[in-house]
Length: 362
Image 1: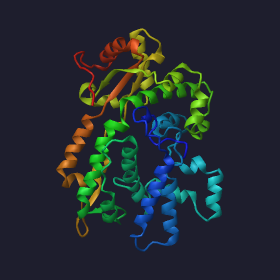
Image 2: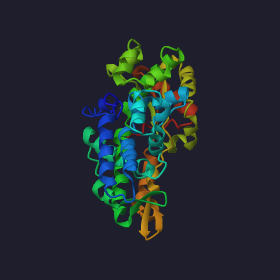
Image 3: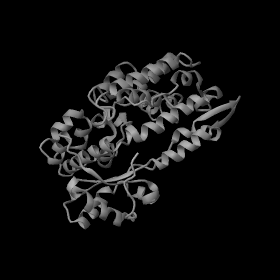
Image 4: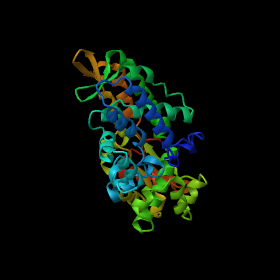
């Protein structure tokens, strides 16, 4: 994890965003250790399992974190949280077994299951509390203002899930505000998205040509993968920051919500656009993010003893944020600078986007 970047290619925009999954995992472990002091009726073995799950919850991340996750999933069907399948036969599993710790129990917690899983993976969890503040700090943006201290004081486990005390309502809102502001400015910034798409194209080609096996790619660190990809023009262009440009960058109101159905079939759409534009297929990349959902809005708030409501039911601010979050979604079609006008026209024709629509930027 020391050699897997937390934010993929965001350092192309924010030069100090070079922190790794290792620092983040230590941060989640620290929060878990603090929270565990407030948990009642829990054995020492259960606390060890919980804290360990927080420490290694991201150990299955492939190089550059989420950048290549979808591609590798198509080949091996694994998610980075499937740590039992990824590491079940390696040294880490043997070490845990020697100490009487089950990797299956750890994986269940990482998946959000069991008594403690929701504290690590749910609508408002320790994972989010750390990465939102940490990512804001290293990028230098001023959006990491999550009231973690208040959340740690108000968070509890009830009825098999995470509950925030009524006094933590505004602290919960602070997390959603941070999440909303970080999404367009950091996590979905067009520059790291373009770089990721360019390298994803190169990796897909290598996997299809059997130049690299999915399990080999998954176990590499960032620089090992890049080194294995050197020599390909599109890879060298990324390393020299000669990136494709935005031929189309529009929201759901311009292309319609049905465009999300193209996810997983972006290459087919890119081939069609390239054919219509009369250029080689590698000169068109299509980038369709998932539908923008704000699952944190469903966090449960205890408004009275044994009575719960979801955060969005109590907060007009959260309801407004959800609408704004959907409006901030952008799909992209990218190409080399010399082909942008041609690709833009054909992409608009194929996707049914009005020719009068201009690039919608943040």
